[in-house]
Length: 209
Image: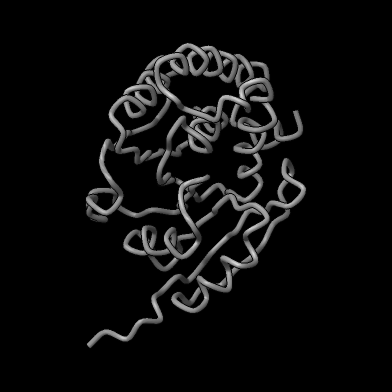
């Protein structure tokens, strides 16, 4: 696997956990729509590899990762599986109770350092999360909306890494009208028209009276 150099342990152990995760997802998918049905046949590329590519942007000092709108667990759970045994914790925000239950089940069965918050992002106080090093999100909202959700959790060194498709250019323009941020675009390994949008120094341009 191309991301094995970024794994915290033997690649075979990581793959075994990913396979267990896949089985759980397929089982729960029958009663709860966790991912798009047409992507199930290509789960390893569309979901696992797409999530694991974030590993190349993480550093050893990234200890707390906050994932917004976790849904079926992407990208956070594959990242947690790949990081198992490393001093790295994940906070997954998913307001839908059944999806939150699924995320807790996977984390418990695989022994992952994961905390699931079954609340809306807007209802979480940044004091509850402590320092956040990286904020991730995949297929949740437009970039301006993601900036608004992420901003309360940003510290001086915090970065956001968002999966975006062909719409990223337009969304960056829209976001730039409302938010100031440093942007790095990294071409997606799994989507020819997609990118990973890495944001730093996020702050609002709106003048407060």
